[in-house]
Amino acid sequence: MTAASPGPATGSALAVRAGALPAVLPAGAVLHLRPAGLVRGAAARGLLAAGGARLLAGGPLAFTLVEVLVRAPDAVTSAMLPVAATEAWAESLATPYRERMEALLARAVAPRAPLVPAAHGRPLVMGVVNVTPDSFSDGGDFHHAADAVAQGRALAAAGADILDVGGESTRPGALPVAPAEEQARVLPVIRALSETGVPISIDTRNADTMRAALAAGADIVNDVSALTHDSAAAAVVAGARVPVVLMHAQGDPRTMQQNPAYACAPLDVAEALEARIAACEAAGIPRARIAVDPGIGFGKTVAHNLEILARLGVLHGLGCPILLGVSRKSFVARLSAGEPPKGREPGSLAAALAGVAQGVQVIRVHDVAGTVQALKVATAVAQAE
Image 1 (cartoon, rainbow, N blue to C red):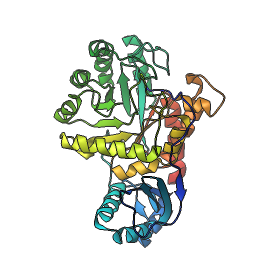
Image 2: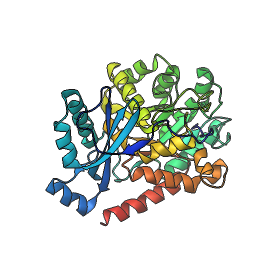
Image 3: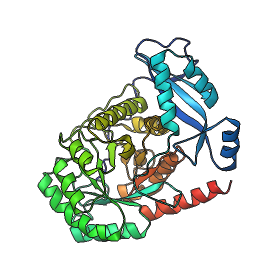
Image 4: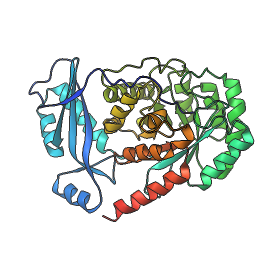
C-alpha cells in the first residue's frame, strides 16, 4: 500500500550550507537540530559520565554533536557543535529562540513510548499486508483475504512486531477506494490475524475504516494523510486511545508526484509533522501516542528522498518515535539498475539500516525475515563494543 517515488530528480530550492551561527538570528528564523556523532556501548557510557554526550530518545544511542540548522526565508545555515556547546549557545539566544532550542533538545533526549511492547532491544519491524489488487509493491498478490491472512501469519512467524493491514493502494496515481470496499477487504484479515497475538495496525485514511478496524482487533492507526484526509479521523483516534502514525505527504496519491517542490525537504517535512502533532494534541491525542513517518516517496523526488534520509535525525526534535518506510520504493531502483519492486530488497535494506543508524525506532518492510536477520546481526555487533 506504500507509494513509489516517480518524478524528476530535482532537489530542494534551498541548499543547506555550512557556516558560523549568527550572533543575532534573523527575523523569522526557524531553528532545527539534528543529533549527530552517535555512539553506544562503553563509548556512550564514558561520554555520558563526562558530560560530553546525551542519550538519544532514552537510549541506547547517545549523541555527542548537534547540527544546528537556522532556517531563514532565503537560506539555511548549518553548524555542527558539541552537545555542551549547543546548550551554551541556546542560553545566549533571545527568549523565543532559546525556548525553541531548549524544547528541541528536551524532546531529542526524552524516552519514547514504543508503539508496542518489545523486549528484543532492536527497532520494531512492521510487516506490510496489502489487501489490494493494485499496490505497486506486490501487484495484488494478497488481494484475497485467505492469501492476505496467510501472508500475515508468515510475516508474524518471521518475526514481525506489527502487522500493517491496508485495503487502499496509495501508489502514485491511485484512485480513492470507497470505505465500504476498503472495509470488506481488511476486516476479515484483521479478525483472523488478531489471533496471532501480533499487534495490528490499520493503514487507512478513512475514519469509518479506522473505527471498524479497531473494533475488529486492530491496535494502531497508520494514516498516510496524518489525519487530514477525513475530518472525523482525529476524534476516532482520540476516543479509542490508540497509537497513531502520522505520515507526511505532499498532495494526495492522484497528484503527489506531479512536480513536487520543497524549499528544504528535511525541514519542510519536520515542520509539517510538527504542525500535525500540535493539531493532534489539540484534538486530545497525546504526543506519547504519536509516531511520525517522513513519507519517503509520497510527493517527493529521488533527490528529496535522499535529502530527507540524510537528515532524518531532525525528526528526533519532535519527541516521537520515527517510523521509516523505504521498502521497495522506486528511488531504490533509480539509484541502482532499475529493478522491479520485488528485486529491490537489498537496496531497501541498505536504506532501512541507514535510518536505524540515525536512531529510527520502527522499520516498515515487505521482507520481514531479511530485515529481522540484519537487525539481529547489527544489534549484536553494536552490543559487543
